[in-house]
Length: 351
Image 1 (tube, one colour):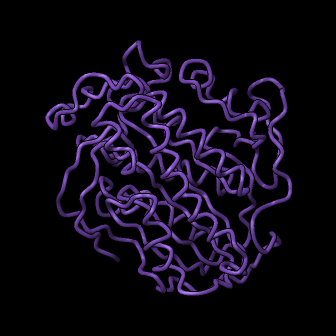
Image 2 (image 1 turned 90 degrees about the vertical axis):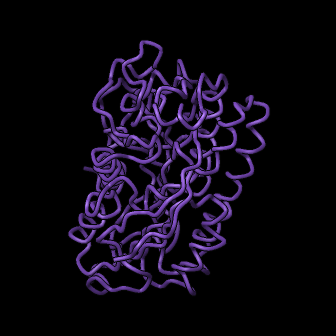
């Protein structure tokens, strides 16, 4: 069990944010670095010693709904566009040219096998730390329980911190969870980036203004992935699944759709917000392609579950469902945390 540190996170943890400071609730079920929740797995798997599977080819041009098999994971033969045509046509996200297969249920990419995991490391921001999930409903706790069942004896460590930005991954969190070369086959899972985009929302930045800022914190993420991908640091082999960044406006940029955002002064529309997010999601996907890791499509799957989900202006209105974001406009609510756990599980377990 770990108690989250005093947090000061951007409201809109995923984006259009105002700062809100306070004490995190204690989240039960996590593990401190080095805590053994069962000992190393007996099954070391047949995956490569570092990196991912050799087959990273993208989906074919077959009709939507057909699936093929990529390792142990069923993949959509239609790729990203078949999963999220509205994001391609209306939002402007285009990643199929990166050639990455996508899971059959559209949780994210499907480039890696996840055999024989002996250690799981959680990194990232307050979403991973558990804010909004209550004592036992945080996605990290829910996912950790499933991973413990899938990999008997797996060691699970948590180095996530509320309020963290991408630069903190390499500067603080990775050193806290990796104190030397890691000989165990390790799975790293995290959400990060929501706190990096806050000032852009406050300023209603144009796309030209937002682009170099996004490039800078994507470079921070790249530096963290560079460390994890280096066999000198992870000689036992590493698998990485990280989420892209969601926001609460359902791809409309209407910041006042969440009442607390308006209270904080975020009113009106961030005119270039949707385009800025599209650019950011493409950069996150490009990192996954470069390293052979996997990216979870958090923005795409949360669209239709935010505060503007019923608006005809939302490209996701046709698939609108329950609200997955808390009243603070930042963190997933309990249902949202459960959804995040399901999404990560879909990539890792193919279920």
